[in-house]
Length: 157
Image (cartoon, rainbow, N blue to C red; front, top):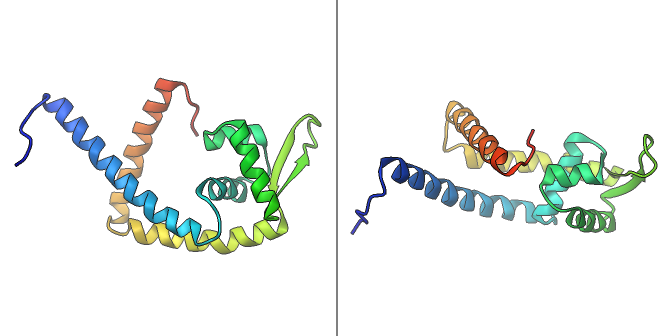
């Protein structure tokens, strides 16, 4: 029997949207996590790896901000990717106090191989929606994300 308790149209609509978003996100996350693990990387490693692959070398502090994680967490992830020979730390040429993380040649080769596969996987998962629906959903999620980030003082790009 369906719960008939009402909190008001606005609240019912918002709650319904939130439940659908949370469930869809959890399923999408599970399916993408499995794909990421197939590359021999954890999700945090892949996220940092992807960031460096797309944006190029970045200071560790900037990586932390882009990943929305602590500096300590970023250091640990970079340490682990360094052990795998995928990432290296170099001193900034602009400021010797700054350490920059960048992909090694081995890391760049792996990035070029796995990111295409990952993109294909995401494309297949999203194919339940038309291109137009994906664009609309992306725009709505961006609008919501920016508004929520502003509430907690998080900078987004």
